[in-house]
Length: 116
Image (cartoon, rainbow, N blue to C red):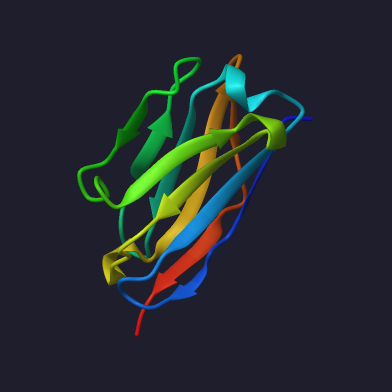
């Protein structure tokens, strides 16, 4: 069964950091491009970052460029999103996503709340 599980969300003050994890099962994440998306209440689904395969080239939305970093850990079959200098507008549910041979796989999401 193809599955993604996100973790690492929480409540953080503005300027703080969080690291989100996206763990895969049923397939090898290194073989596929992995994307992070987010959705805030009342806002559209937004692409945040993705990492290509096999060269690992990253992409970042302008809103997070310079603050977020996406990277892989092959040994853990996981992709991470390091989020620094968090802002209140980063508050959202964050999801990871992969297309595995036509199967569009999403995790359950992890809530990130940036508030003082």
